[in-house]
Image (cartoon, rainbow, N blue to C red; front, side, top):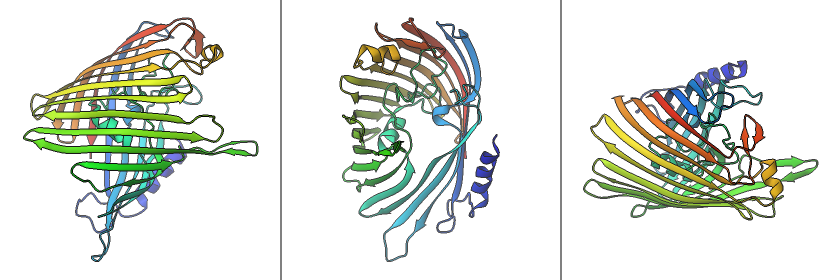
Length: 385
């Protein structure tokens, strides 16, 4: 671990007074964390460089973390409270290659750092948090804390897999955390509207010219009990990214819902990312869970992304834009050893297909192979505190 990482962690614990108690003094932070580990075996069609591998690793899409959060309650004559949270990701064994092309690098990074002002008028957040759209997709994915998630950060084992920057999610699009301004209305009859503005954590500079980037996201959500054992969570999402150096603006939309009745839940979503003229990524996701008991749950999910058509044949040759699709089917079992300890075992089949005219990248080199398939078996444990 780098010295800078040690200093970061040390500073986090030394600054301020950290409490484990829910009834901590006004404004005092509550310490929390999660350790998330998996053992994995995968076997794939393409031997690049090996047809099978094993890993003992963090889940990159839901890495181990430690944080502090709290609520500063305003004076009695004001209804404004301030929620705050700061969280560090502590990934001891990354699945994806680092800048130097090696696996297994450790990483400590800031995941969350925000102030959220709340009152009868709604809430206003300023700082780094996940977009509202991401939280909805995390909610509908039962394999969020496993390799079976549709985040697309844990598919590096699949040779030919497009990079995360190219395909941000399989069954649903993901943007990950950003520094933002976000307003949420109060909840009316189960409905809530959220609007956010962020710079996509980027401002590009070429020579003396700065390229500005900004993203607006709008989410209308519904969460309510339908009576008895039934409940429903649904969302309609629209976002638009604009860059000064683009002749177009990236747009994305999604419609999805999760319905629960008794011990069953069913979730589904459909979404599009309009990346450029004639380049659209179409996502679809479905999942189902069944709780046998308070401790045992079985879950299944399926995600697919159809990659958009290229602007020119040169794009296909360069690999900058690809045609084809990627899929992920998962079946798994979860067991709650304790309210804060969860074990899981799962099987996953991941596929990647490229249409004629698009090249797969195998081991970092363009090849003529058009298809690859992998079978993954994983067992893991997560502890929250």
